Length: 463
Image (cartoon, rainbow, N blue to C red; front, top):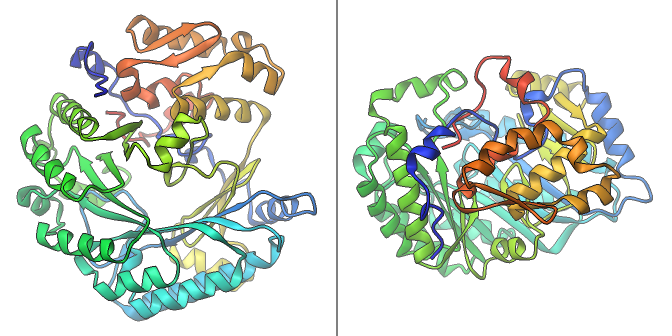
């Protein structure tokens, strides 16, 4: 059993509990600016779809609507039960697809596709069918495509799942968060355990390739004991992956989180104790701690990719699809190519206005520099492989590593002194409890961090 806590004081972890990026991208999204326009993004699309382009494609579709408001939510979402409003959004989503798809080289295949939200299953089954068929008719979908979708058991029927299976989805991520009734009431997400069990049984009977469970620690009234009860119940399902996200309390960014009373949240010490228990319990039950908030069975693709050092990160977290260009569709969605990021408008009127004018819905973006590429590579290797080979970086980017990262290595010294990072034989290796501090360690190599910190707090705490 792996435990990063075996030789570390919990007080040491509290020392590093600070605000920082999650590094689903580098540079992080707060660096994006309006200087990068829709025309710039169009140029990037055309430049990456020339005759020499052969990389695979990943597609993300954002469905922002939910039936009810979960107070903990950090997503870009809108609460509505107005089907006309939802149908209007689907109409504009198709307009965006129709605008972008013809610019993509026909020989490029889609190897990964994800529906996120919001709540994609807030759509009726016939709406799911209609949208999925439109997407499949607009792109070249690989027969072995990985198709994943986020589902909410609270408004799900068996017909939702059979429709998702029919149109090709093979991976489900089911939100649970916590089974404790007091916690559910405090965050306005009433989801009886029996409901989740029923949905899991339906999904299992339909033979989805992977069924994942999403949990959150750090919510109101959670304790080590209560969260262990939730984990024990989840383990009865034997999901392929378990994500245990750290609740990001950022009411200055998400005003609805003010409905959560700070005095009801577990202390920093208790959150660390909950994390400790979670890692030790899940790893003792046959799950590999991938890093950050992800756990996977030992035979899962994520576990294999980490062992083979092919694991990567994107806006959905850890992934096995390295090298694919990501096209994001829908309000607030982000696209990422080799050299650029582009994010759509976050407000529906702005998103609709751009598409009505026949324009890409790009609001902000960023074109990467050579230094960004180098730092991104180092940060992603640390986050995914838990180590960096300095000589390999030097050869790939034609730099002197120690010279290029002089200030980064000085910032790293405290982690070395605390036994969290090991420097030897030209490698930087994250060891022991350093695995709990991947974000903190990666921050040492972030050239944009000081600029981002100069504004109001924009990141969640790292623990």
